[in-house]
Image: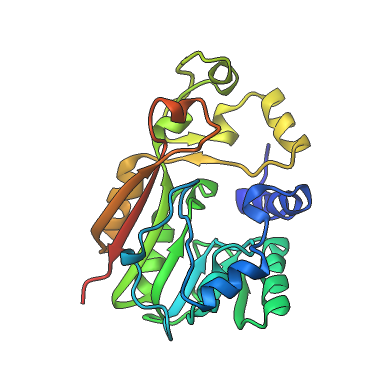
Length: 258
C-alpha cells in the first residue's frame, strides 16, 4: 500500500464526513446559544468531558484547535469568547466548522494543513492548543508535540487526547467475539500490521490509517518537547469490547513553562 498516510487520511476524513462519522457531526444552534451563556462542554477522548478547570478563561484567548475540525469543539470555543484557529487536513471537516460559523455568526479562522507542520504560525502565537485523539493518524507524534510547544506562549496550555497502546495489541475481529488474542506489537501501523485483505477492506470503508504509539512517545514525547504535565485522566469508548476491561484512552493537560 505505497501511499503517504497524510494524503490518504485527508481523503479518508473527507469521505467520513459524507458517511456521517460521529466525529464529523457539527453541534446544533442550541449548543452554540448555550456556549454564549457560558454553558459548554467538550471532549478530548470518546466520552468524558474535559474538566472546566483545565481551561484558562476563554474570553479573548488565542486558541488553536489542532486536527480538531468537524464542527464540534471549535465553534463552542468561539461562542464562549475565544479567538479560534482550526488547523486540519480535511477540507470537508473544515467545511463542517465553516457551516456552523456561517449559521451562527461565529468568527473562525480555518487553516488546511498537516498537524505536524505549523510553520505558518509564529512562535508563541497561541494561549491554548486543543488536540483530541488525532495523533493516532500520524506515524510519529513527536513533531506534533514539538510544534505545539513552539506555537504556545510561555504559560500556554496543551490539552491532548491520546490512545493507549493496549488498544492496538489485539486481533480486532476476535475481540468483537469476546476473545483477547494478542496479535500485534508496538509501535503499531495499519500499513505494516494488517494483511492485504484487511487493508483492502479499509480502502472500501474509506477508513483513516491508524498508528499505535507507546506511552513513551505519547507522554514522554510531551516531556521531551519541554512541557510539564499537570493533569491526566482515563476514558473509555462505550461500544468497544476492550474498553469494558481497561480504559483505552488518556487525556493530558500540559503547560509550557514560563
